[in-house]
Image 1: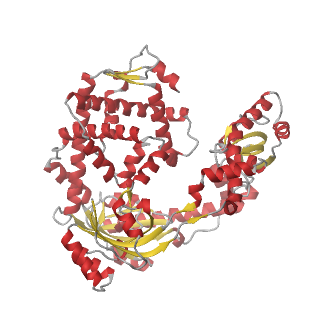
Image 2: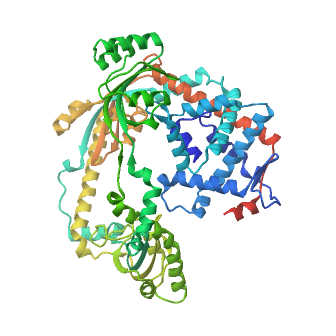
Length: 626
């Protein structure tokens, strides 16, 4: 989870360091560092440092949690292994230890003051008026990490940063390399383009029966119905169990007392505020306010702040800097106070709105508490009921019998295909969206029960496949109109392709694209300068056309397929890359290439550290860790 905090907070280590170190192990070949160890309490050893199964397991779980938004909830350890995620996690851990050992050997130390500074400067932990300790603690709590563990990890990060940074800080990409890459990447081309839509094709006669039959047979996959399945589904989820879960008044009272703070909204203030760096300006601003000048005018004149830069809130006391809280809450609505000094400077504050503290009674939230307690109890029972379900099925009961014993409903679902659509092409209602429902339905043999499978985070399901309709070529008579439409579309596309190629050939023979396009009622468009890599000035030009114009000389034409037709583009002019015109782009490329140079140096560093601190992996312990 610390990786997620790093990504959201902005990098606190040398950018791309860990990516490069992982890549460096790939370069070495993992075989170079693999030895079969004998200790079962370590999955790897780097020098004298052991990586335990527990440490590895925790890091792997954090990585899988971080990947859930990308890969979904259902990723398993086996899938993580197949995708190389598990090896990547161990490789990163070994890389980190190597760098730490190198740093310690060089005497790199991180002071408590530097550690504190990095924490309070981390953007993720910032509130409306600076570092927010409550937010800091909440984020660590959500990440499942103690403050001590986070600070220890951060200290190691900073140690690695200083060590690697001291070796790579001055590295720069050579000027000739930057020039060559910039010239290639930032060259632009201006082109004249005409588009020949498929719909403009004329002279295409209606196909005969024999033509359609032949097309139907030659393109059978386009007219084949997918495999369909019908299943009996038993679904078990916490919401379902919660409906039948009794909740006593004592349990509701206990929940209310334990969550009392959740139902209490503290007094809050909406404020306008600006900060200046010195007392003299602060006192001048305060004097202007006392004269009756509007707060916004004074803020703009003294601090250059206006509009949303001034507005904060609503804020509770604990969301403000300690120095601001009490003085601000003592002000009336519309009032402003004396300048207040904090570590950030001198604050001028005006209260715009005051919201009183509000506490909801147990009566106000009783329905919500009853539902929440029932759901919580249901989650506790969910695993137990799932085990009873497995026992019933393992004892020979079919899906319906197991459902009857446990008081659970079953449902007939289908027919549906592998995408969850019915024969009419529309999504089938009621199919499970979470978990591996479709995958399980199509992996289970006809007449067989599936295992009990997790359905997302709060449920399970088991299904029996009742019927399988194999994929089959639809009868010609039922798809005759589709066959005709597809044949006509192919003919139109072929006609627009030939027209585009003929037009390009005439241009390449010396013809004028504008003059050739007019009799055909084709509109010519001259583009803005287009880059080699797609950008906003590329418009609707397809990738193939962009690639083509950068391999075509001036006054020559190239064609490419678009969404519904063909483009013909004639290169009108070439604009060489100009570092002076695009200085920002040149400097950004220089930074990017310099980063690559520093990454190469980091790889060399890792190579040398591997020789000084041999790394071994205990494959047996690693397998047991799964």
